Length: 223
Image: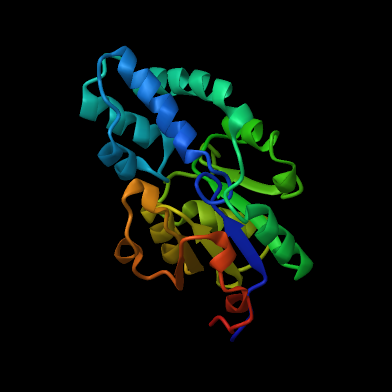
């Protein structure tokens, strides 16, 4: 039976908030303490994925003399200093307003942990009315992106079937997760990190700005 899309699930970092440069800076500061460079290649490898998995990857790749948990703790201490400078991605408030005007339900599904996510959102009034927020440390999740679990849980929290949801993601892992969830998935490609459109195959639309998302996708029947 066909149904039209009624809800949009957004990733947060790099999709609605321009927080990825701040995550990069925080990681660079932590790694520099141990004489190691946090490279763009390493950034691309972990971007959008589970926080714990990313920390394990960084610690192992750079042979840091600390545990993944200690790395996360040190990075989060740096991030707290940076959040006041956090800004929305271009056109993020506008697309949120446009979707609300259409009566579209919204949710956030972020690999970031709950405490960090809530701190970030405290600086972003345009997102505070989005009540459904699924974070990477939710105990109901056993797998992070690229597994579909976080998007399926967000749909369940919204009370709708996955086929009624559209996902907007900026990372390869996130796009893979949206597609695995059976959701129409839009890829927001940020060329600052060396990503190319070809790396996001399978997305229903590939854009370089939220302003370019074709909202008529919401009207097309979804099987």
